[in-house]
Length: 207
Image (cartoon, rainbow, N blue to C red; front, side, top):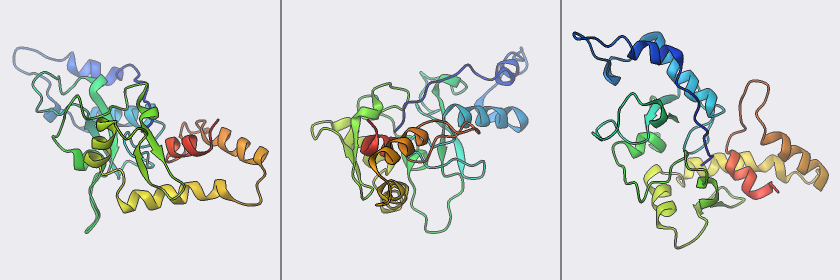
């Protein structure tokens, strides 16, 4: 889970919400069309086009706007941009396991769900070279519960993390090569994208 630095809400969202009047009020259910697409693209961009939870690559057709605190939580404004993220899995293929926001669904526990908006979130998880994820500390109940509730250690994600790790284990690379490779991987590319499974690579190979 990579720390996400929230940006200002898109002007289009602010202007749409400002249309509120005696006969019409903005709700998340009414958010659609260009405005909703602008919001989603802004979320993807601020995350470097990786899922807010598992860090898979986000695409428009395989992602959804995620409410960290669920819309059903009456203490949270469903249109509050600071509570919005972008998670992978929009439309599930037959037999595909649910994970991330899709699996989390309406579950929310402030004490047990780690947030990618917390600057300390990256330090709460540990990774292995074969793709496994766990809490960095065995006593960290929140990290352990977060892995389970988001399905972060399901076989599919383990396999994808392992594949992301393999290029860094190339025997033809010396340590300087690896260091340069890692340094470049942890930076946004020219399109503003982070490498997939950023936290895994940083944990295993970063300084």
